[in-house]
Structures are given as structure tokens and as C-alpha cells.
Length: 316
Image (cartoon, rainbow, N blue to C red):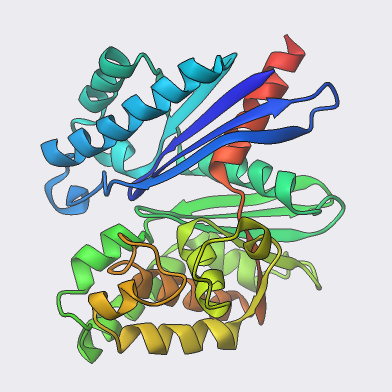
């Protein structure tokens, strides 16, 4: 059975076509990742820009053609933060349906966290382990804690690399005062969420819990740390990066121009102006919860989508 998952994110669109065997395991048939910056300006204007929607639709038409060509048995497509917030989000999804035939579901941040964890669990051996997972996206960051196989905590907060880069970073490279304001905004979001403070101070985080990061910011940090000229998923998945390592990369990136970052091994085009905000967010979350290292997962939401769709079809 071939199934497809499509993640329509604030910065990046992702496709996974997977072929499942009878035991529920799958192999990747086709994958795609395209930076479209769909959520460009949404945090200011409250609407998706026409040109951003056109960029995303162009990519989605290609994804639809690929799904048709491979004869997938089902597609689970979701939209996240940018479409959730945009006043014309439903209008965009109507265009997607009309022009590609793909039905898209807008999911909550909490459901995004659950699905991302499902994707991570398909790539990393975490069964039986206590895990806190972080997914830093373009418009939001999700945190989910699993203990003894049960979801103990999940929360979405508006720490997003597109959102924060647009709001706080105006200079190239960023000025010290811009970095200070960005850091204050990240801390403000963490401190504003009473559940984060409760999680941190209540002793609910088990000793020895594993901290896992997923999505483009975290995988980019792992790629930079390995000076990766060509992205190699097998070297990203399971890679361990220390909090000190994240800090060193952050300082290096903050001192570079966008052009210099774009030429840095590990940074893909379209992420050079976002990775500073992403690196600072990753560092501050690690510092906030007291984690000295992070395990990186190459898998995330799109892998969770195909796994969730397979599980639902199997029940039927």
C-alpha cells in the first residue's frame, strides 16, 4: 500500500510517499522538500500573500502529479500555523482543492505535536524511553512529552522562525539590539506559558529524559555541525548536538551576512535569513529546560502523517 503525507508549513512544503508492508513498516518511495515561505508577512497582515500562495500551489501541483503517477492509495495533507492564522486560509485551501484535487486539513498545534512525535518514533528507537520533543517551525514551536508510552504534555507556542525573523531581524547581519529583542521575545513566550513553567518546576520531567529536536532548524544545525556539503538524512537522524555546540553555531551565524550563511555547508537556500532566529530558539529552549544535548530526528510531521493514515486505514 502506497500512502502520501503532505506538510504545508509556514516556510516549507514537504512530501513523503511511502510503501507499507503488512507489518506496518514502510520504505520511502518519493520525498520532496520545497521552501515556499507561504507564511511570509502573515504575522503582520493576517493574510497569505497572493505570490506566496502561487509559489505553494506550484509546488503542490507537482506533488499531486507525483502522487497520481505513483498511484498512491491515500493522501493525508495538513496545513499548520500560517494557514491557521490567515484570514484567507480557507480561500487558499479551496484553491488547492480546485487546482490539485488535494483535500487539506488544518490541524491544531497540539495535533501537530502528536503527529510529529509519531513521525519521530518511526525513525528513532524511543519506545519505553521518556522523551521531550521540540519541533521548531516557521510559525510555531511544538513541545510534547511522552513517558512510558503515554503523552503527558503537549503544547504549541508562537515561537516561529519566519514570524520572529520578520519581526526582530531587520539588519544583515543582525545588530546586537535585534538579537537582544529576539532573545527577550523567546523567553517571554516560554515564561508566558504557565504550563511550561509548571512542567519545568513541578518535577514532572523524569530524570534522564531524552531531548529530541526535529524540523528544518534542528536538522540544519546538525548539518552545519557536520559541515555537510550535501544533505545526508542517515547522518542527521540520531545525531547528537550539545547545547554548547548550538551556542557556538549561533554566535557564528549571527556574525554572518545572509550571503555568507548561504555559502556555509549545511545551510540550504531559503533558510539563510531564518537560521539565526531558529538557532537562538533551539538554544533558549535547551537552556530553559536544562538540557545539555539534543538528539536530532530527520523524521517529523510528514512521516507522522503517513503513519497516522496507515493506522486509520488498517483499523477500517
